[in-house]
Length: 197
Image 1 (tube, rainbow, N blue to C red):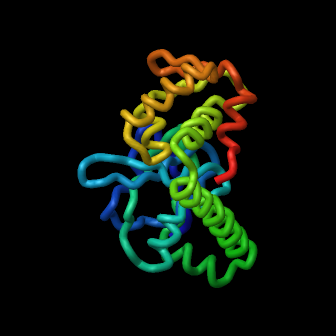
Image 2: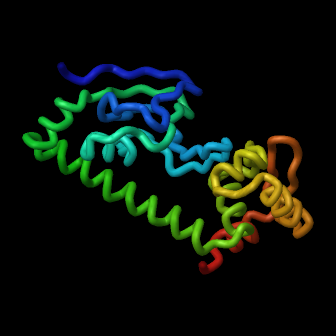
């Protein structure tokens, strides 16, 4: 069996904690959000998987023969391939180019993951909220995101995020209304986001 074409709409759940791994996800378009979800429903985003990137959860499941520990949900319409476990193992053993691409992507993803852990461990709430708002807003002046979504992104409680956004608004960095945060002082917000940990 060779790779299976994969097309999934926004919101499709690709895997949940406890699921068996059906194969290696090779994304060519779209995005997968990979999150940990606690028993009480709290969620934290671990990373996102886009074209050419690797899902550490899937890689670990295939290499260690274990089940998923996190949840993967399609965030932007997904296209790609699902490479069955036996085909993945064969290609890793015999295809030098494929092996280097996968291992390079794993190394890159691991470096990003270390940064997430470092941020959670050492960055204050103000800095993490500022980083999340700037990341979502990109080059634009608006971040279309709720307080709950920011809390999920940074691993905090919605109430704490709401208090921090209110403080940033009082400081003149942003203006917030339902589901939209307008950046008023990008330079100032960027300085808060880049503060030494």
